[in-house]
Length: 230
Image 1 (spheres, rainbow, N blue to C red):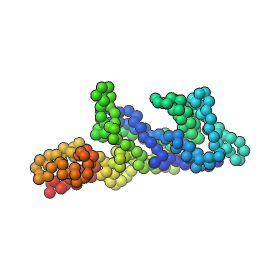
Image 2 (cartoon, one colour):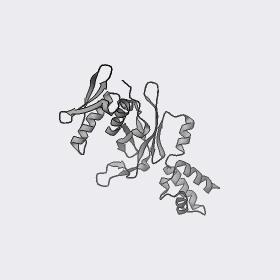
Image 3 (cartoon, helix red, strand yellow):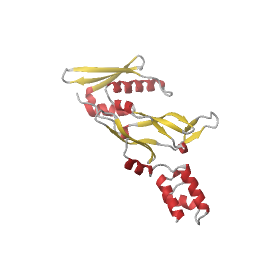
Image 4 (tube, rainbow, N blue to C red):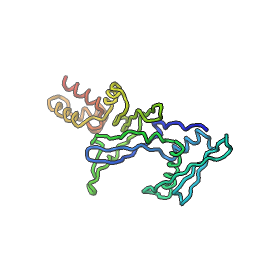
C-alpha cells in the first residue's frame, strides 16, 4: 500500500487559536476536500470508502489492500461545528479518521505560531472582544519537512505580505522581512518626515496605489524614508 504524501502549502489552511490586544496565535488544519483528493490521488477513487455510524459521530475510512485482498478500516470520532452541526460532525469525524491513516499528521509537528502585528486586530465595540479585521487573509505560503516528516520550514502571509517565518536562514528571513507589513514606528517616522518635506501623504498613497500607509510593506517604508531624507 502506498504511503500518503505530506500536505502542500496550498492544501493547508489557518485559523485563529487565541487573540489578544498585542497579537494572536494560529493553528494549521486541513479540510475534508483535501483528504478526499489525497485518497483519490494515492489509492484511486475505487479503492477507498467511508461510512458513518452513531449519527455521524464516528467515521470509518476503509482502503482496499490488494496484497491481503481485504478492506482495512480505521475509525475516529468527531465534534460538532457551530453551524450545520450534522454536516460538521460528519466532516470532522472523517478528517480525524484520515489522520489515523496518516493524512496530514505532520500538522501535529507545527511550531507555536504567534503573530505580533496589532495592525491586523480590531475590537468589537459591543462585546469588547478582539478579532481580526475583515480584510485579513492569512495563508500558508511555504512549508517543508525534514527526514522524519516534521515541519522544519513554515511561512505564513497576509495577502502576499510575510507575517510569520519558522526555520529559515538569516538571509532568507531578512529578505522576507522586506515583504512584511509596515510597522507603526515606520508610519510615524514617515508622517514626521513629511512635515519637513515638499510632499504629502496623499502623494505617497497614490504612488504606491494604497488607501492608507498601513497597507504598505516594510520595504516600501524604507524606500519612502530614504527618499524623504534625500
